[in-house]
Amino acid sequence: MGALKIVGVFILSVALLSAAMFVISRPPQEGEGVEGEKSALPAWSPGNQWSYKSSAGTTYSYTMTQEENWGGIPSYRLDGTVNPPFGGWGPNVRRLYEKATLGLRTEIFYDSAQSQTTQYTRSYSTSPWPLEVGKSYTEDVTIERSYVQGPEGWSDPVRYQTLYVTIEAVESVTVEAGTFESYKLVARSADNNLVEARWYSSTAKNFVKIVNQQTGETLELSSYQI
Image (cartoon, rainbow, N blue to C red; front, side, top):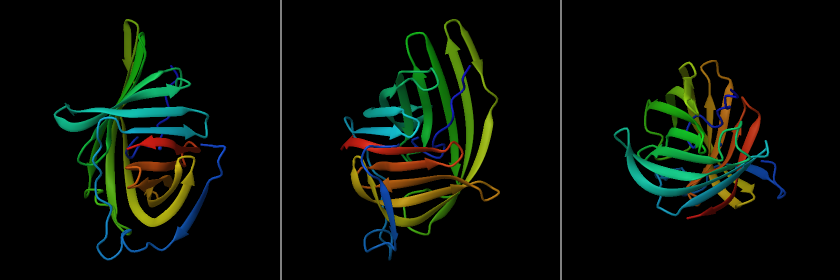
């Protein structure tokens, strides 16, 4: 039934824009991950907004609406839309992120007649936060996806993935939403294949660019409100 590709498995969960995009690599500067300087875990507040455009032509818009305990885990809830509906699911989307790690726990695409729910169970060898150049950790992910369409429901087989994540550098990244000093996080598989690269900005309190090597998609921040 048109199962979705997983874009950005290792947290929030990841465009070809009219504005030019470029990335400049350089050694980290003072206050950007050297000599004890780190990027702390951000706090999200109701009303925070992020919009992304993907190279596949999809636009995602999210608003942090409230904090809640989801499965007993303190979480941020983001509600938004996906346009066009992703794989036929949507146009509404809800995401739950664990407050302690910003790891994506649940993603639901839904409308009045159907829904697709993906549950992620994550464990880390060490906390990803604070971010610091040179830091490495492993992330074990269990992925469970279920569907409801009218009176019918079904599930995909459970999937497992282990990611080896390294914070490689601080880079200046320009996307439609602006230019951001960003930590570059790279995730590799057990056989050392590149899975995904992400750029996190403390200014935007989120990732500003995600490149998924498995799907070939790029996701870039187009606007935000903090």
